[in-house]
Image (cartoon, rainbow over all chains, first blue to last red):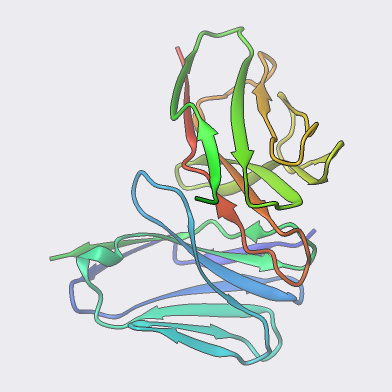
Length: 109
Length: 114
């Protein structure tokens, strides 16, 4: 079945440094979503990418969908302590979102 | 307000007991899902349902059961057959189309077996 791999599992950064998490699928995805889960909270939808090579920005966050629609990345510029949490990608191929294991971001002030 | 509600937030269960976790949504979504989250494991799919009166096993369905008698409700029962039930359980819903699988999550239920 569809597998979505996400790296790294953890990332420690100093406040102000950049951060990137990567998501790779074994199959072509019809779309990909990104979610953020704050410590003790539940996943919250951030964005969905649908088109090959698509790039979307939300303030300091940049999301990319690969040309082959098998990989995606989330980049945060100049991290802040409010960025702390676990970031999940979820691939769509059927109507069931398949989640990666997530990347936990720890920001040191 | 539209949303998805899980209850209770915290639940303690004695070994050998069944327990039911509630999940209700008023988003008029067709699809509903149950995930289990353990530290470092991400979200693992337990059961899912695309329409009323129909549901399918996910990747880790053993020891769990569900029902979907109403569109709004998708309760999960953790049975005594589940060997390691202590975990964070998340319910989610979506429109249920492959073109848009954006999932809306409840607050979660943290189950502890004592």
